[in-house]
Amino acid sequence: MLKIPTHLITAASSWLSKIIIAGVQLLSVKYLLEMLGENNYAIFSLLTGLMIWCTLIDFGIGSSLQNFISELRAKNEDYNSYIKAALRLLFVAAVAFIGIMVLLSKLISEFYLASFSETLKGHESFVFVSAIIVFGLVGVGAVGYKILFAELIGWKANVINGVSYLLGLICVLVLYFLQIKIDVVLALLALYAPVALLSMFYIVYRYFKLVAVMPGKQYYLDILKRTYGFFIFTLLSILVLQADYIVISQKLSPADIVKYTITMKIFGLVFFIYTAVLQALWPICAEYRIRKEWIKLKKTVAVNIAVGIVFIIVSTIVIYLCKKTIYGILSPELDTNISIYIFILLAVYFSTRVWCDTFAMLLQSMNSLKVLWFFVPCQAVISGWAQWVLAGKYGILGVLIGLTLSFLLTVFWGLPVTYFKVVNKESVK
Image (cartoon, rainbow, N blue to C red; front, side):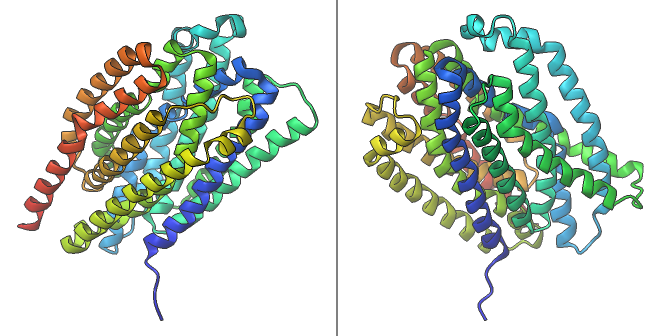
């Protein structure tokens, strides 16, 4: 009987989950845009851009724990003490992160939401802190998902995540059909509070399941030794990937912000499918490395990159040909006269992401992060500067050119060179 590889089962459930999540985000556009209006929905869009910043809330603890679990599983050793220690550290990290954000909320919100000061009427700090708390809890819950992926039962994480987003959509629909007047904060709570709460329930469940486990000091130290590397890499990656939201908040009109956000959500659905594969492959690649199964590792990498790029190109063609229908469903009032050059750049950008994100995942699975500390800061500088300059001249097209250039000039060649050096070095040990 043919046995389906574990990572493909996880990836398949991830695809379904990601499709549900992206579908929920796209469907919610139609209802939230109608309930909030263009200006308030533009604010909502900018606030959702904070979600990725809130992945910093664990300070790298989740990725550190995931690799420990994968490594100990490969050796058939117990790892419960690491989970218990990591969850305790996570609580401290979450309190510290939210506390820092509250202290800085006035300064950050007044800059980030500067274009909407008249709409918010002095409530910038309140809506910013509300978003940070909701998305911060989502970030905490994501550590629970990393545990499940490391245990090669990531399908459970995908089920929980998919269900939580469906509950969020139901909350939005209830508000819409009951014709309840909402503001930006209530919209955030309706869509994302279920996402935060369900993942948090799993974290609490997993902690109390290990009530009898008493980790020693060394377990905390082991986790902390690796966390700073993952934290720095995540921070620098976010500076690259979220520079666009900082730029559009200052350079684009509310109408263009909405258009850019919806377009990226559509392409996000496509790219989510590939990231689902990467998420499932991380622990598999870590185990291949521990067992020194280099041929399997190289074949897995080559096949996934090739399939990923073809998938991006085909999807872009379909989206372009069907753009009037797709955008019309999401927002009938939205101008669908979007340049073909934007779609070409989106195909180039996301194909580049397939290549770069794959090698970044591989290096993280090998705990080889130092090279990223060199390339990603360079990329962040190029990305921020290029987008800021080009967005002023070319609008959305300029943002995409800046994003793509930042990858091509740095990590596009730097990550694979480093990866093959690491593999060659480890293969001769």
